[in-house]
Image (cartoon, rainbow over all chains, first blue to last red; front, side, top):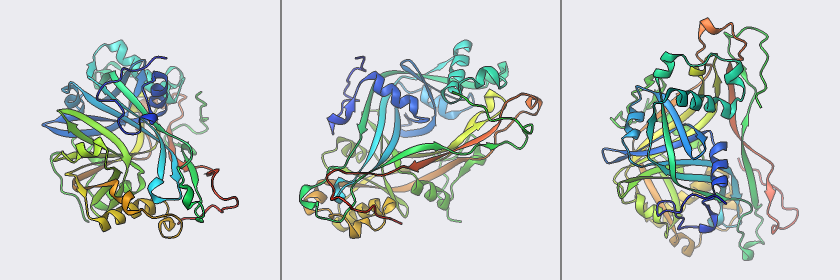
Length: 212
Length: 212
């Protein structure tokens, strides 16, 4: 089993049974998540920005405008913290104290740098589209022009350390309180795509593509 | 209109038309979100933890174990960064460059402190339950014992500065590319509660409560 090395920054002190350093587990959470929070330090103050991202092997990538103040600031940090959180449900116990959420989260650390290789930038931008819309890049849309590529910063985060934390399943009910008329169990929570809303400037009758 | 003061840390430099300092807007995003990321600095390294939270007026609250290393660390910070992100959909344009997400996010700053007043702690813990399950606290469950209250830390974050950033609606399509056979528009995304899963140790025939 391939794992990330356990380091002081990612070692689970509370609820260690919920922790995992397994790459497959961590990557599956990262690949399901649509956004990530990048936390860094600027002038001794913690700053954090949620943004879209994609994973390729052991590296995460974000992109933004070359004019972005935020991207310049994060690249000045020797170590940034990356967090992802997927909420899977709420957990209803028979005591207030034992209520909880089911979740899968990842905390990781990396030294970011700006990716300047043009082909690598294109590969990363294609991976962003492929993550949710496989096939769209090749078939349907205008690919980035040289000017658009120059206007886009791609930042790479090679993962140095990472851990996942997972809670799943039923509540911890207190036996001596089972006489109460409290419904207990868990209510799953999912992200659901709803009915697409076509753009008014699109040609009429354009079919909704199936990306899979 | 009541607003948070615009400070250098929360002033929107990129896409200022997407920014808002309006309290009503910011509070509605905070109240819809189920989790928040708390970013702080420990030994010059940025650390960030996703966790559940609740808002009461201009204050946010989290809770955790009194043994939590994380809670001790954040309370040593004079300023922490709080971020919330709600993804509302993906935005499909006719150029790769103009693809985007619809989202509502909040970035806020606060000096945290541990709430030690017992009644205030109870009020906050009740607010956590009321946020998703109004009525459950009063009617259905065993309330925290003195021992459980002592084992629980409640941390208060009085919001000093906060801003929201919102993108909504249609993509920016490039007119000269409208001849392409690309479906464009947006696909809304929502969090959906699914069928509850009852705990096996609950008395048979216990009805699912309606909390509203």
